[in-house]
Image (cartoon, rainbow over all chains, first blue to last red; front, side, top):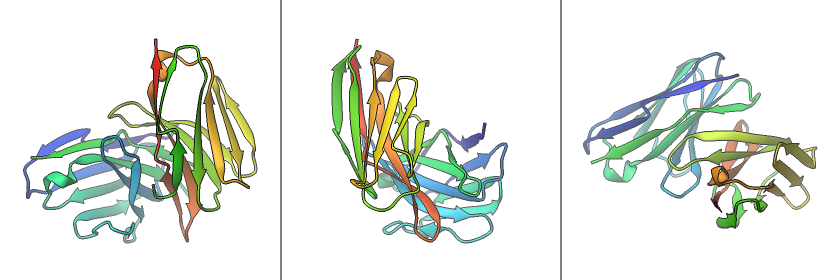
Length: 114
Length: 112
């Protein structure tokens, strides 16, 4: 079946630094990738949708200059949290889709900003 | 939540009992999915039901969909302690492009 690899699974960084999270589709071409954020005991909130080769579409309230998304190839999307602050600490999950024929989720990245 | 609500927010039952979780959504959908998430982990896809389907079964899981009421339910029969997790419904909506929106989730605790 379709597999999405997300890396790293957890990361601790200092306040003010940037962190990059990768999401790779291993055995299919992901025409669309989605990035979600999940705070403790809350649901997944869609942050942005990215289509290969085009700019990401951000949900209302999500700062595009803070959460940089790159989807330069059909198998890789990256989310960079720039100038991270403690309030950015969260669980970030990507999902990938091929022409909207189902979605496969990565295993998530737990980001802790200290 | 971005799309809808789930109830109950939390559910505690004894092993062997059935657990029912409900999900309501706001907009027209193409399909609805149920996911499971163990604490601090990724999502596990449980079942997908299309907008033209009313009921679907998978093992101990039974999902219903009522598009007229914009609601769905997930029934877990003969629950086990290992079923303890958070359960989310998610809907695929088309807003010029497809995206998956999650409900608030139900935290299920099954006592052994």
